[in-house]
Amino acid sequence: MLDVLPPDSIGLVEPKFHTFDSPIALDCGRILPRYKLIYETYGNLNKESSNAILVCHALSSDHHAAGYHTLQDKKPGWWETCIGPGKPIDTNRFFVVSPNNLGGCKGSTGPTSINPDTNKPYGPDFPIVTVHDWVKTQARLGDILGISQWAAVIGGSLGGMQALQWAIDYPKQLRHCVVIAAAPRLTAQNIAFNEVARQAILNDPEFYAGHYYQHNAIPRQGLMLARMLGHITYLSDTAMRKKFGRDLREGKINFGFDVEFQVESYLRYQGMSFVDRFDANTYLLMTKALDYFDPAYKFDDNLAKALAQVYAKFLVISFTSDWRFSPARSREIVKALLANKKLVSYAEIKAHDGHDAFLMPIQKYLQTFKMYMQQIEL
Image (cartoon, rainbow, N blue to C red):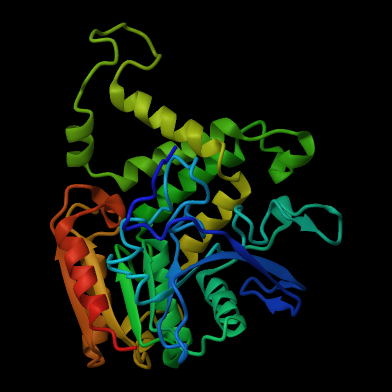
């Protein structure tokens, strides 16, 4: 519980909703007749509507990127490190829009929403969505908010992939594109990790082919295992060794299969807490969107061709210990942009935190990010 809000926080924030009554055609071939997006905004839109920033979230994040909903909140939004007064995304200067993606489970239309055709939750019947679909819904949200061009579209991890797709799909509707800890498409290894996570959920006896809502059940074990596996890939070996080592919970070996090492306890806690705040069907959807992302696919597998018509200036940031989306993958994006003589700045930040580094208060990272954002003209 907070007695006083931190001075560099945006403070108390309230989510907003917009229901879109016009249908949207999705990449999977299906049409949603109507849908709702939940989002938060921070800062104020200037008279020229030229200071708007779109923040795209990663796989298990949501619209609550900064600030607090109540003084009782234990934690602020997921990107509090970077959003707020005087921070890289400075809310004294920018108007920030942070939506929850279509298919999410935090207020936007998704598997937990009621299907108007059945009056039951969509569950597994909710259509599979893609990064391209998300960008389309975000563009519609921008229209509703009176934003014809974003000063920047920004994201880390899967959010960075959305930012990249934005630059391709709507080249004149953003002036800057910030891609952090991302990749132009997943490797086979990354797809494999996602498939193991999905199989853990799909084979949980409480999954009921995705209709677990109607059985008053939750595929807890499967979702917990999926999160544990994912969390391992978000950290580096160095970070895990530094945080846990081989420390024993009780200081001795018990010769059993219960929790003995501190790292086991940590992973189980992460898995169990995730079950209480995330939906299994949404997790399946999000990982599929991640797998399918490949903007070069429609351009003869040539990323340079895919980026030939982009208009935005780019900042690309990677982290040395990120083995899930390694610096080499970021450099592929940079190389493709340079092949088209596009303006791009690249920073490879030395960090020991693995993929999660983009969420951490790493001084060099924050300085680099802030310096780039300060030179954006409004």
